[in-house]
Figure 1 (cartoon, helix red, strand yellow):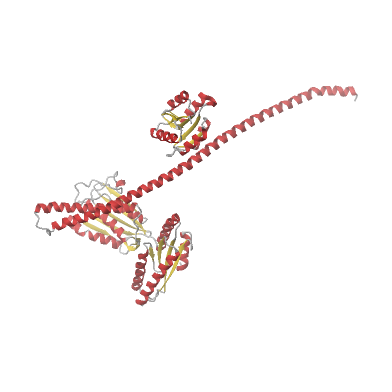
Figure 2: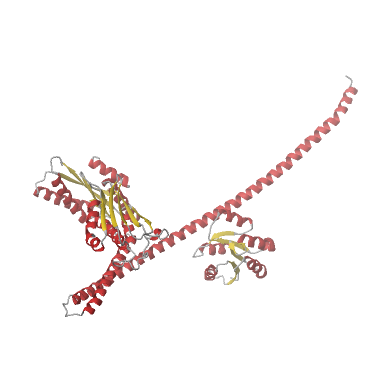
Length: 437
Length: 121
């Protein structure tokens, strides 16, 4: 090929190359503008992220501040609540003493000890006496409520047959039932219904419920029932009285609530009984509720969880530890393990258990016992001190056993927080080790 | 200090409390407004150095107030703090977007507000 021909060919190719170059430039420009818009978008996103971050940071700060404020307010409220409870309990105490004096004076005049009185005087004084008694009931109830609200009521829980408690309350109402011409029905199981309860508290609840039932029932019957279930004991008190309306039913457990009592027979109430009952049942880990139909009657039901000795012990330890970690204090547990019970008759065995139980209760409210072990939780007690207590108790137990010539071996252990365990789980596991359970 | 502060809040008690705490912190020139319209008007007329506005206001809200003040003054306007009793991250972002300088919680001791004021003016 000649040089000329080559040149011609190159000439022909030139426009093609130019157009390719132009295309390339265009592509580059496109790329650049895309890059720019991407960069802008990135900047925008970055700004948006910054704004979001700013918002989150501010929110975070504010939440922290508000949380602190909430904590502060909460503490103030608790303090106020405490003050209120203290006030109520102080005032009630102050009121009780003069009331006792007044009551005594009125009774003496009524009894004619201070000279003869007329029928009219007697009538007036009787009214006074009734109202003084009512005032006393109100003050007692106020004290109970104040204590419940302040968490100052400590239940003395022990193994008890709820049927026996219900029977006792039922019997106490026989005279009233007779005078009011009402029937008391008892629906109790043939056997026992045993639960870990504070006997006095449960009697108080039954008495309150049965008392209420009588107050609102003109004719028919009051039914007291106890049912023994595997996990709980369920009790109920129902009547054929006037009933409570649907809208009032949720309010029955509130303080100072009284419904349509005017004109009813019997003594006036204080409007505190049911809220005290509710507080006591809830302290047992149970619940109480009411069912009612206007003109058909009302039924109050409460359920008491049974608790095994171990469950109750765990609860005591948990509660004790909660108080402890707050105050960085200590807690000790005395374990009395009972061995060699074979061949000892059960009556003797019970006497021994009761004896140790009584000894233990002098030391603490939190005592749990079953056939092989007695556990005593001593809140705020250091190991050193607990060891002394254990030694003293062991001495008394040995003395008793040898005096009664009972061949049972009772040995004691002391477990303390934090030395022997830092959680209730660890402490309970140690107890299991000791008792071999 | 000679700094002028405008507080916009429809709750008279809150106004009084914030004012008390600001005065205690030596901010003595304080003006107040109880709704959005009055707030914007006072911000434009009185030209405060700083505006503190509640989020919820009768007829409008603190974000709208902020937007209008920024619109009226451009970048040279007063510093703006949006305060609220109900903290919300979405609100915080919104406050930033309408040009607020700070977003903080209303507390009974007003500490977050006073701190924000001290930071800004």
